[in-house]
Length: 112
Image 1 (tube, rainbow, N blue to C red):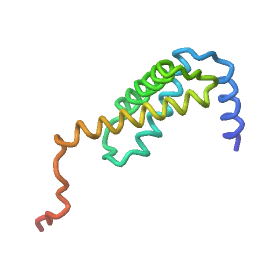
Image 2 (image 1 turned 120 degrees about the vertical axis):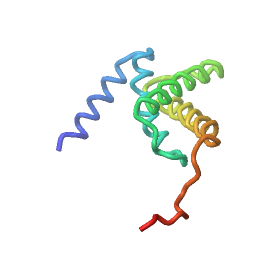
Image 3 (image 1 turned 60 degrees about the horizontal axis):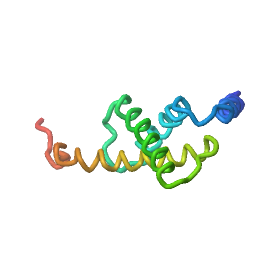
Image 4 (image 1 turned 90 degrees about the horizontal axis):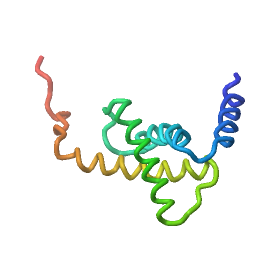
């Protein structure tokens, strides 16, 4: 199984990239999927909204690090800031959409 080798090569490629927006977008996609999996809200959202939240969260994380004066060196630190921003956006997304969700009808028995 060559998966760990491919992952290591991909990570080495990411380390070779400078901190540019393509790197932020790539890492934001991963961060969005992980943040959605870590959230306690419903997981019935589509992949496009998950990726949009991840990329937006990565942008928010990079902007916050820049605002705080923290240098982002390498994809590892960028991933942490992207994950933090994505988790914040997932939490806000769940808080905003909570009043519009239908209540769980698990107590209602189906008719025979």
